[in-house]
Length: 316
Image 1 (spheres, helix red, strand yellow):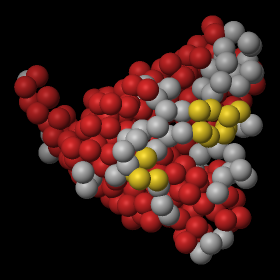
Image 2: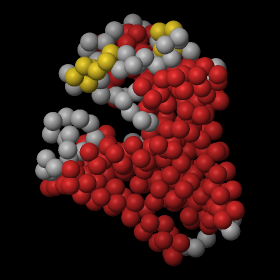
Image 3: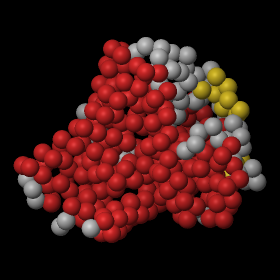
């Protein structure tokens, strides 16, 4: 088993672990990273981009360096390929969150199916930062589908892409960058400057995963032509360079209309409509989006592993 096959087996085992077990219930590594990053933020915070860049360097660089050290230590202590595969599996399981995403989305969907709007509103913050109190059932369903689309890229495909490129350091580094963006990358008055570096780095790191997610959603969805058409026509209108292609492709693949007015932390945004020829989102579309997300994740594993094997083979 060579290094590339070791990675392939490890990534597959890690994704299988996520499918079967979901996220670790205790001592989640991503939660531990978040707590550590929060402590670093309290020490370094200044209303200045330079201090924010230092915060990003310390936190994301530290996570990537930890991956480098762990990979080298495993090779030094136990040079058998199986040991490296086990480390890759553990790292993949820790950073990939597809099953938790599906569970949370499905929980909101079940509450809406029961007509329990209060329960759906209470559960929605587990998926996204929107203000749930002003949302009716259809608006909550739309928010869930949009969150499933975006997080398929952030929590699954993007990590697999960077894992294929850089192994365990790539897995940990990407997840660190994505977590930092969620923590400090939003446009609140306190974080507009400090979080700038984290937000921009997340845009760069998420770029390849978002495009791969959009392509795979088009291929795995019910309407590939509709997905490609929505991506081409509407993705550039979204304020996020990475969420735009993903949400537009999901909208076209599912035949629904996404985007429009939403509220974050009391701040109202009027976003462009994606796939304007589609129908409004219904509660049943949550399950369809979850199934599409799962297919995209499995396809992404195959594509990224194949890309690594082919790329390294040509390099040699």
